[in-house]
Length: 72
Image (cartoon, rainbow, N blue to C red; front, side, top):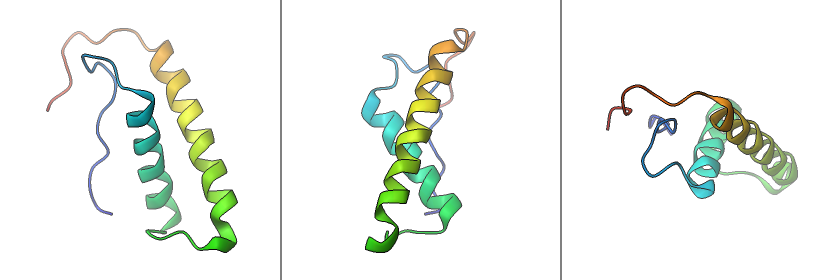
């Protein structure tokens, strides 16, 4: 759970919906401290992933193009 989240802005080809969701899921796991999601909070966890995915997608759509590609 200590992995870095991949920088999605400026990827060529652009980040896919799956890559954005994976980053959102990793972020929600990190901030919640949950590597395995208990059934009792599954719905709340998935709702958070959906919200972060949507917000990240909107952000990436609105940011200007990068001058240099992200480091790999």
